[in-house]
Amino acid sequence: MQILTATQIRAWDEFTIRELPIQSIDLMERASTACFDWLMENGYKQNSFSIFCGKGNNGGDGLAIARMLSRSGHEVTVYILEFGAKGTADFQTNLARLHQTDAIIKFISSEETIHPIDGRSIVIDALLGTGLNRPLNGLTAAVVQHINRSGNTIIAIDIPSGLYADKSAKGEAAIEASYTLGFQCFKPAFLVAENATHIGEVHILDIGLHPDYLKTITPEFQFIDKDIVNAIVQPRKKFAHKGNFGHAALIAGSIGMMGAAVLSAESCLRSGVGKLSCFIPRIGYEIMQTSVPEAMCRIAGTDHIGTIDSFSGYSAIGAGPGLGQDDETAAMLQQLLKQSNASLVLDADALNILSQHPGLISMLSRRTVITPHVKELERLFGASTNDFNRMELAIAKAKSLGITIVLKGAYTLVATPGGMAWFNSTGNPGMATGGSGDVLTGIITGLAAQGYIPEQAAIAGVFLHGLAGDLAASTISEPALIASDITAFLGDAFLYIQQP
Image (cartoon, rainbow, N blue to C red; front, side, top):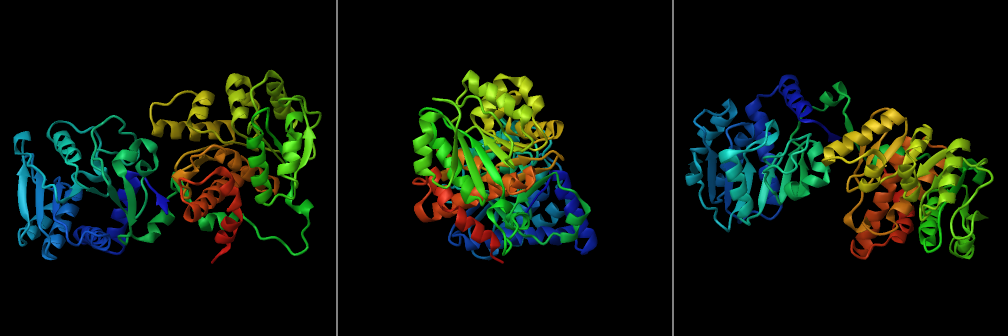
């Protein structure tokens, strides 16, 4: 699935019209038919509809949907936002067609003509679409607020009115949709938490845009999917031995936080690494040896990680889960960055130490993956005013530092040194639980130890982590999901990506 900007989506429409060829009014008919079919297939066969239309092509979609609904026997009322100018050519064509149906048409030319919405009807938002270039105000904002206050189910066509496709509309008036019916591809606006109350549940509808357009562009954003991960993760050869799959090290745990080390170690082993050594404080020795017998243990420190004599002999090293931020631990992390030639995966307290000692950030090698959540990214690189700025910051820092940044969230972002941004397509809210990030650290470390370059390990790691969480949730539910369940279903995730 592609993620395209508003400019790229308009260009895709134009490419399709030119290359098929097809008239724009017929392409609009395709989009509207896809929306009508979705409504009929998703439980709205008996409803009445209140459809709000602007005079652009998004409004034209709304008029065409209204015509189809009216002709199929639904009670339909259309409200057209009226500023005295004619609509686009396709809007006018669909308005003329709508006049041949039983749909009721009303115009909103002032706040006094904003009509009450029937509490029984489904509201369809077809006011503005992706062409928006400034915040809503005046009558348009009043109509949007009126719709939001109605309490009705709201279905946005293409994008909720008031949102921009590829920049922030935080704090601005925008439709709060129950469902958004997007066309052909995701838009960046669908992937950021600040828009959650506006987009509702997103459904992407295929409207037959010409696939060859995608060969002419380099998207700024890409979805991580099964095919991409299957191409990364290589099958094992018949005569392979454990030495072929790398030796990972985990530097994790402190007094009261050994669970994080255990979770990370278990997931690292389940990711397929050949050998795992865990550097842990003495306080956690029995815990680790008992909980994860497959891992070797090296003691470094008493209650927290202290000096480590050597970092050599490991193909990847993960550090951070349950680590603590003691001065000795910070000194150890500095030595790790100075001495190790292995791929590094840094999470949790390793990131907190970096933020407290910003001079260490410049020491990160190109073989480094960092896995911050939003607050950790903020502590590392400064605050952002909105989710789009934060995403841009992660992409810019990955490029300037030459590292891979995994910004964790509902659609985890993997920003690579080459400037690409990958959004994860797996995962669910049940994974918002303590220890989930420790499991991810172990998976990425294990993959990196097997010889995958850091960005491949990150891309495959976040997908498998989310997929295992999805498989777990489908069996035990989202509320009951705990971090160790993700590791328990990691094998099923590997089996899934191997399926044709």
